[in-house]
Amino acid sequence: SDQNSAPFRFVNSVGAEVEAVAAANGLCYFPGADKCGMSPQTDSAYDFATNLNVGVLWAFLILPMAIWRCRAARETPLARGAGRRIAIFSIVLGGELFVSVALSKAKQHALPVAYCNAVVAVAAFLTPVEEIFQFLEDAITVKINRALAVGDVRSTRVVLI
Image (cartoon, rainbow, N blue to C red; front, side, top):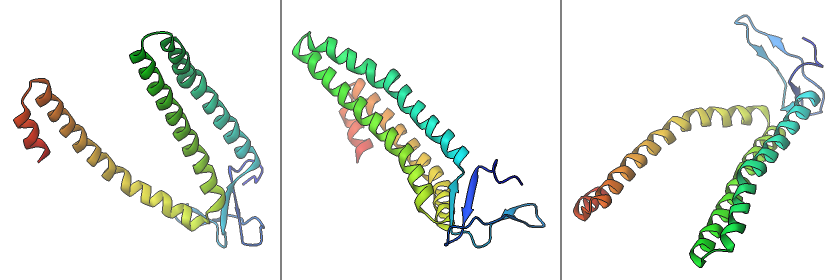
């Protein structure tokens, strides 16, 4: 394969690139590889996409919230409080998204190949478990909100206990 167009670089502990070895089952292995990193072309594309993501985030999420907060500041104290909460929420959400993108790149550069594979395997296992608990949480939230909406405090206590 052409190393210039490969999306990833596999290197050993000395920093020399490791060539792929094709197995009989069609998979490629990189024996002796200690680290996996992005090729310069992939790294450049990743940086562009990250910057685009941050720009879109600011343009479509945080900036409108800031404008709305400024408009709310001229209104009642209650509206000012809501504007402040929305602005804080927007900044926290933007920060969380930015950190998650930056963290994935940091993991890619810092962890050895075996650890990267372990992180992917753990995520593949934990994601369905997380979704199950999220479904249960959503179902309980709907039951509680329904009971509160109709004024049935007793049902709410049953669900919570």
